[in-house]
Amino acid sequence: MSHLPLLVPVVYLVFSLLSVLGGLWRRSLGYALALVGAGVCVPLALWGLFQALSQGRIRYALGGWPPPFGIEYVLDPLAGLLCALIATIGLVVLVYARWSVAREVPEKAPLLYPVALLLLSGLTGIVVTGDLFNLFVFLEIASLSAYALLATGRGLAPLAAFRYLMMGMIAGSFYLLGVGFLYFSTGSLNMADVAERLEPLAGSRAVAAAALLMALGLGLKMALFPLHLWLPDAYTYAPSAVTGLIAPVMTKVAGYALIRLTLDVFGPAYMTERVPLLPVVGWLAAGGILVGSVMAIAQTDFRRMLAYSSVGQVAYVALGLGLGNPMGLVGALLHTLNHAFMKGCLFLVAGGVFYREGVTEVPHYAGLGRTMPWTMAALTVGAVGMIGIPPTAGFFSKWYLVLGALDARNWVFVGVILVSSLLTAVYFFRVLEQVYTAPRPADMPAAPHSDPPLGMLVPILVLGAGVLVLGLINSLIVTHVLQRVAAPLAGG
Amino acid sequence: MLEDFAGRYPYFLTAALLVLGLYGMLAKRNLFKQVIGMTIFQTAIFLFFIQGAAKWGGTVPVLDPARGTDPAQYVNPLPHVLILTAIVVGVANTGVALALLYTIHRRFGTLDEARILEKAKGEH
Image 1: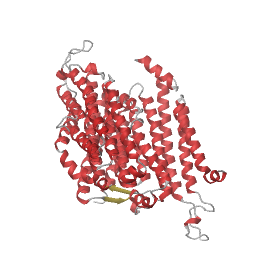
Image 2: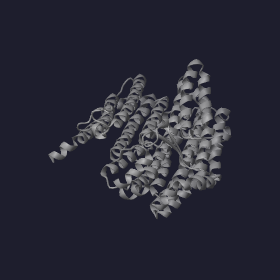
Image 3: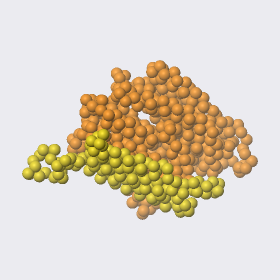
Image 4: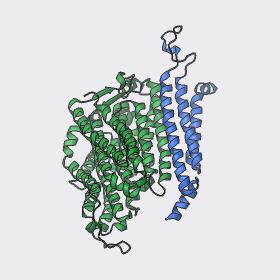
């Protein structure tokens, strides 16, 4: 079906509007409509992925205007995979959000769900668009929704969201400026068309400036070290459900946009030799992995620790891209999937503990292994995945990243990946030690609480199981999707 | 040197505005002044696109029988259309920023970044 590329973002957009209207009439109707929208999109996205795998690229000209004059939407295996990932995480977190939001920010619930759908619409739009300017518009739709969602939290949340808005604005503007340079050099905005017209322009300084500005903007959006300063505060103060939705996919989609630009617009050879941006991205990522892990060790707040850990983990994606070889890119994309499940699972666990106990500090997690066995089992699986112990998914993405680093004969990167796994083990074993061996602290009620309600527990367990399932079927994903995506890098 | 400048002054002006906006966003401690910096920064990019579309002797992009269909006779309409969209995005950004400032002011009673952090510490 040729309308497939556009379907998922549009369905989100329509249900977002319906959810606002329904929510005005009856509160529960707004939530129900949001849930239906998110539910409809999962099979659509999965169907899109299978169609893209069997037919190759599905192209759709918006409004019947043929590209390069009109806006084009492209669903290839990579876009299909990301779309399915975003839709799945979106549905799981929306199911979870009902209890979590009712406990943390009940007064904001009627507008939180439509904005969450708007965010999903923006993210899936970024993934499927084949037009550089359209990507900017979707990026801003997603970012604006994210600011609004993050600002609903406690304490300093509005200030954190405001700082994020400033950084996001600078990032979006740099990207737009880059699009301007590209447009005035090539006269086109369609990605495939621009790629063709760029070939004779390889030496142009304007094109080099465009590549630099766009990479800078997307690096800022994906919180690539040292541009990550906005992230920890934004993730720490937001409601659990919001962080659970934004942390797994938002920065990863900016990373996806950078991968898309490298592969389909500028070309990997241009980005490694003519304008050596990919090596720079790789080295910054190596720094980010270490800084994120060390900062995570220094935190006592569980959610803040996860936020710093996100800085390190998203840098793995950048590192894989920076290697510029197929193995590295396979590792980066596999890590995008894994980290979405792992970090989503861990942030939802944090929300579950907050729901029952009202605490976020790691020492307060002491003894929870006995009172919340299922939640803590999910936390253990997520932590084991983050450290990278087989058979969880985290092991395989790091494995491919190490293979990629060996291919590039970059021993420093191999060392960074190994050292950061040890650092990750340090901060997660500290949590696990509290959970399973430490006695219950005296200042907490001794009455045994149980796992959070089923509406929260099931999403937590689904994501936890996802970490294991992804690990078990990783070879399927790698051979059927990722190696095809990474194939262009083999020649260059 | 002077000729170089004459040919490229739109770029220099854009760059100057960008730097001015960035300075406002990153160096000012009052959040409202940061929003003003943000607006200047956005406008610089709008102007950059508009100057890229301009042509000597070009007219509005509506087909004029006297001028024919030669594209050199008309100003490029696409950057204007893009910038209309970008302005809408910019307005949305500014609107969200002002709404956040309103929330911050209601919660902390000030828009000075240092004093907000002080007050937030006092609450714990």
